[in-house]
Length: 146
Image 1 (cartoon, rainbow, N blue to C red):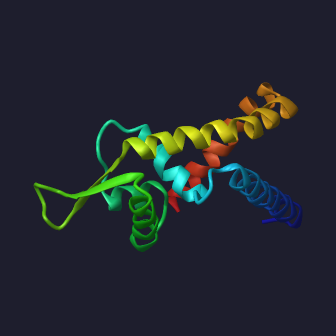
Image 2 (spheres, rainbow, N blue to C red; image 1 turned 90 degrees about the vertical axis):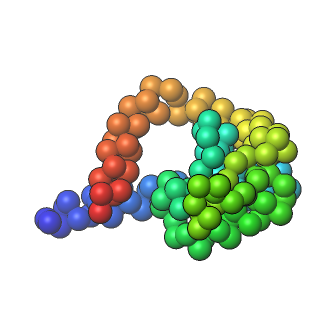
Image 3 (cartoon, rainbow, N blue to C red; image 1 turned 180 degrees about the horizontal axis):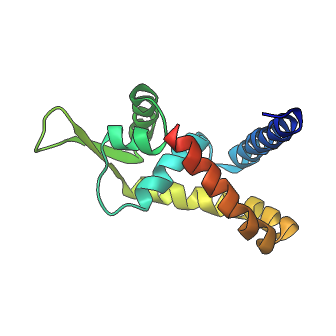
């Protein structure tokens, strides 16, 4: 890779990583007490699914180890936000579903996050955001293959 291309890539990834950190901090401050961004992400994922998921499926969806996902699921279960039950067809597996209180917590988090997200969308404009999506999606898909 040429020196110019390398510098461009370093600058791009630095911007992405810094933006990610700043957004995580900003959203983390408005989440309901005791909820972490990782908790919200899992609840949001489960709220969008019509069926239960296994911990392994969730770990794969979030590109995490099974141990990391088990830790997050344990915290969500203790908070009453999810139900974990044995898989009736395969005793080695478990099934995870969002609970009514988990759905309410996710909805409350969305309400708290809305002003932050709206401020960003308004400041940057929908067109800029829409234009960035294809690049970001291509980057994610490429990284998922690696």
